[in-house]
Length: 393
Image 1 (cartoon, one colour):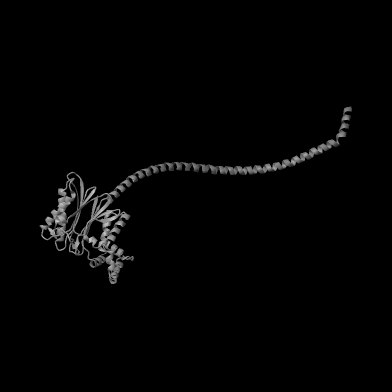
Image 2 (cartoon, rainbow, N blue to C red):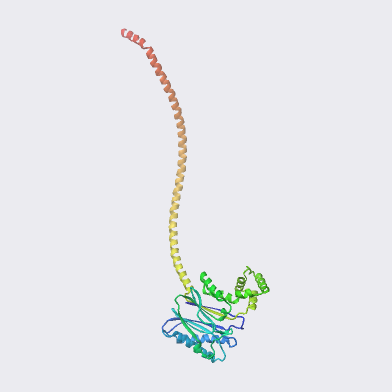
């Protein structure tokens, strides 16, 4: 569980009359606690002194008196009653105050005045305090014993909430509610939820809304809007969206735009404290740690794969050398084949010639045999006579 604070020094007073206090401590049993407070000093009643004194007194009282198992709502109630007595003794100092005391499972709140506490859940923001305002000023505050016959014991509102399902808690002075509409506030939290932004980004967006609210820019006369656009163009901020361009210039500290806005729009001090119950940052760190472990595993796997690839490359190089040698042998065999093919062609030519000559000889032999047979037929009687003469002879 982490706590964040963002202060905006307003242009209504010479110095901010807001105060805040963030504390983390353990009770005597070792249980961890978080304490968050905002206070808005009343103008004309030493507001700066009152708000800081109230948060210090309440913080010290709670830290010194808390113990496990007690009535924590009663503890906050007594802390504020004590703070009211201390402020009353200072003579004419007044302030509002809102307190949130958080354990791991529960949240205990105390409220006096017109500052606010919101619970942030998946459904959005829910205001859990009542604005105690009269004629645009706090109708309830610390520093006096009675207000309209009600003593401080009756003017402190305490409550407790189970933190299950709660993402965060926002404590803010009335500088926020006086400048930012409920719709703008809800939309900012919805956008931050969608974009997975850090709590510090959320408070920075609310800062822009406090300084330059859309409704105020829309209400400017056309002449004043032209002046703003001229200043924006000089600084290189002009896309056609007046509010967006002014916000960008303000974030980038464009001096002449800031001076114009601050002069045109006088806004009150605003202090915002956001308690990140679900601890977005810690969950991000956990996710990063998990990613780091996975990265190390993947890195080892990649190194093993690289070694396998290196071995395969060595084998491939060996195969490449064998292929190269085979290519040389193939080229050599191709040359021999071409020589043998040439010799075969010569032999085939000679064989063809011999075959032709053999055919001619066979014809001549056939003619001679025919001639012999013919002569044998013609010389047959003569030979018989010769043979008889030889016999008689």
